[in-house]
Amino acid sequence: MNIPEKGIVYDLDGMIIEEITLPPVFRTPFRPDLIRRAVLAAITARIQPYGVNKKAGQRTSAESLGVGRGIARLPRVKGSRHHAASKGAFVPMAVGGRSAHPPKPEKIRIERINKTEKRLALRSAIAATAAKILVRTRGHPVEKIRTFPIILTDEFQSLKKTNETKSVFENLGILPDILRAKNGRKIRSGKGKLRGRKYKKPKGPLIVIYENEGIIKAARNHPGVDIIHVTNLNTESLAPGGHPGRLTIWVKSAIEYLAKQMS
Image (cartoon, rainbow, N blue to C red; front, top):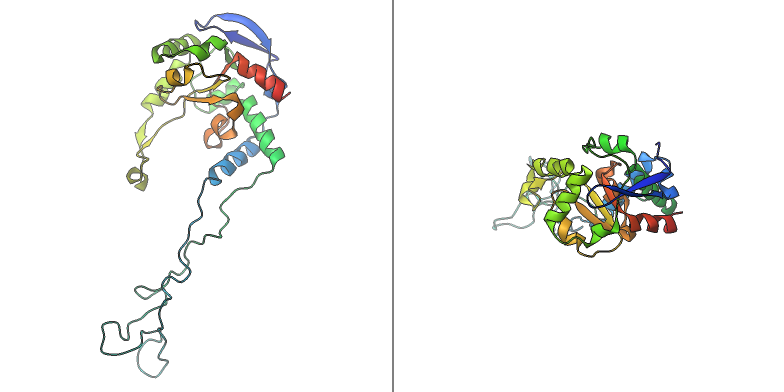
């Protein structure tokens, strides 16, 4: 990735106000393999173990009657003159029998990743937000965006109305990406529709702030837009689905924080 050493800071009208030195983290080598592993580790860490009761279908005294009776040798319920007498039980083929290969709670469903690799994945995901070709490859429209990474003055954090943030996005050339997220919502195929996730929505811009002075309420209503504090940055937010290069808006103080903490 060819990342410049200097970054352009814009005001709320989209005008250039100053030039700053980008932190070394923006020149981290691109590691898509580690980014995918880190995102997978974050997703699988939320999975709750599940499985059937180990005694399910086996709480019976059913026993096979053996051979020579002209009937199948599967275990049968003992007794006579009652509705369940001589019915098959216990085995998977019988009604009410055990499951053949049930889900087991001890199954390993979590992707493990070393701390060092996780940190490198985060740094690489941060650097990917400054590469125009990666942002374009991910599907974000970048024709109207002049420079990467996109850095805004700290005044952006004090906006309190959605209309104000909309005009800022328009001045920076980011509005087409929000419209893409708005028009890209579609009904999910499959059972997920019945389970509280009816719609699939594209991811739009990510806003990285240092201090919330009203910006979260002002920007959260835009389709596809996520707001995150710089101290809570994670690989999954910067590379949803394991695909690096999310369109990201940084405030100047967040960049300065990165320079101190990730130098």
